[in-house]
Image (cartoon, rainbow, N blue to C red):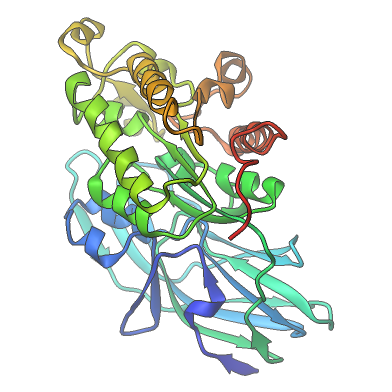
Length: 389
């Protein structure tokens, strides 16, 4: 087997690669952004490599990847399945693998405490590949922090030449991150990117789509041909601001993105349907009774009457986002709005309910991804404008 140098030319979807004692740790926010927020939730989310994949051209019939994943264990909750590594050959699914090895992060949801325990490196192996020159992709687990330790193949590899595809840069919350999807290529952004024939950079950050200025600057500074920002649900369920602050924060976020991408198609997407928060403000809390029964569920703890004092609900957020985009679009014709309920609405909830009250399952991700692709990449959709870079 040939040992292959892990270089930036073989890795897509990460904004930065940190050199660690063992190898490389992909990050989805740059160091400058990470230095401006000490929130453990953000640190966990941005280090989980949703949308990050190794991409190379080779005629190898066997490939091995050594990694050090971080397994999350929630006290009192059912065990989480091991993260999934997915192999694509010339764009088609060709295998899956998981690792039991790795570090362990044990989180007590009731107290917020966490304990990190080191573990061993593991190896995923894909064999029986066709003995022809082909493009190989290994998608990393979307929900497990993953250090890349070593890559081996039984033939040389080289970077894949530019395919001429447009780059789609997306930012959102845990659903965009891929919460409860079965694998990295079945998160809704990965599905939509495949259907749209674009290269994905996914800045979906579970629990952390909070209109942070450092995230806006990361979007501003990342090359892209298409941009979407899915805003609102985390602002509600973290209860971080009132209506007075929300509007200016959205304007500031969009202003910053536009500093680096003045003419790029930019799609603002409001939250998908989430019945618990449609008319009830946050914060969102863990349902401890359900947790005691071994189930993970969430509940809204706000009072609908608090809307009068400026507390945010999803209905309020959608109205404000629609107004802001409508008014800005008068001078920014490549700015567009999509009501998230067109991706997942009341009829979808009746057919495919949210298992934990917040996140869709794999079937829900598929529906959202297919709907997004059909709307955004339609002949008259927001992502039709603008040539590939």
